[in-house]
Amino acid sequence: MTYCLGLLLNDGLVMASDSRTNAGVDHISTFSKMRVWEKPGERIIVLLSSGNLAITQAVASQLDDQIRLPGGEKRKKGSTLLTVPGMHAAAKLVGEAVRKVYDNDAGSLQQHGADFIASFILGGQVKGGPMRLFLIYAAGNFIEAGPLTPFFQIGETKYGKPILDRVIAPDTPLPEAVKCALVSMDSTMRSNLSVGLPIDVLVAKTDAHRVFHRRSIGEDDPYMMGLRKQWGDGVRRLFSQLIDPRLDE
Amino acid sequence: MTYCLGLLLNDGLVMASDSRTNAGVDHISTFSKMRVWEKPGERIIVLLSSGNLAITQAVASQLDDQIRLPGGEKRKKGSTLLTVPGMHAAAKLVGEAVRKVYDNDAGSLQQHGADFIASFILGGQVKGGPMRLFLIYAAGNFIEAGPLTPFFQIGETKYGKPILDRVIAPDTPLPEAVKCALVSMDSTMRSNLSVGLPIDVLVAKTDAHRVFHRRSIGEDDPYMMGLRKQWGDGVRRLFSQLIDPRLDE
Image (tube, rainbow over all chains, first blue to last red; front, top):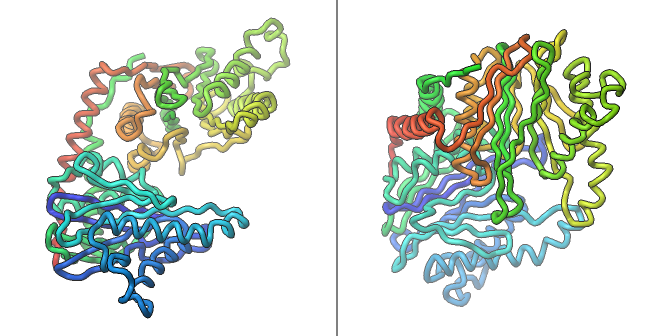
């Protein structure tokens, strides 16, 4: 399982992803689910992925190959994540990569009884356009976040959604948004063993077109340890302060 | 959708269920998902249900028919919920009823592309035995709660699980357990529109073999309204008191 989330705020973008993958409980590994394409001062594009690891890696490899492979630089302008003119074109590029992987692999997966499961959160900004956030489906189509829905989640989304619903709005400051993303991650990790540390966190400020803050948060991270304890103790204390109901016969 | 939960505590049993059913978003109704069989002073048995309403109603009708239909009183002793010698036998009886409905309906459901979806929480006490709590599957088999897992949930379980994980233990007092069940219901209703009021709540004290407290909590219930507001405000306040992370470049 996986838990990734992207928050689109007035001040910028917050992206966070866990790093546990499992193929059955006896095959658990650690893989980063966050990929970044950056030309500092010109563009920052971040992709989070959930689903079948072979599929999501194939999609990312294809996006990288468009840039790296010999002849990549001569490719039609706008046909790689480092050259697309804006975020909508970037989302279309990712969607096309998903469809290519589907055409290549879905039939074979079906022969083994496996579904084609993958979803992506794509966020970022290309100079000249706004910061944007997309949720891309296995079918390669996508939806975009807006002021009324300023965040997307993929993977194990339910445990961590209530705190996002209560806190996140477009005017949430970036530090508070990161804090909220970490509380949401913590609730998810407490309830689902297949979501685990380290957590990758990335922050990009609006109109800076670069990574502002990036961190991998592991077991021994003092801020995360403090946050988990304060939140857990606080929720129990808050609960104990609520008035008990009268149980009349 | 549905959300039901049962808590097995040293002091007794707490059962709670929402009452919204939907067959598509344009067909939403209100049905109680809680059924009670009681012989005050001798037995109290409570059944909560989730899944296809036609299936769960058929199961409940069968259990009632065993008692009500002519000849019911002459049935073999132990073959109705009012005569079984203990809770394990009661769980078997419910499981058998589920299997009978499966034999009767699953084939026709399949012809219409519908799965046989149903699950049940059965709790209660028959004089001479302990208070017990079971989770009964669509296959008619079941598992039992114990001190390490003192609660079961069915339906839309994820949003409301974190608070149960943090609070509920066998020694939780009954009023606090009811409060926790209502907070759990509130979190679920906030995040899933297909879970809705009124909430049925039932409390049975250990060794009393009767309903101690039973209430249907609707929109205008002053305790529930206060709880929702205190909890929502408290969570936001608690969150705002957590230290923000330092976002170093």
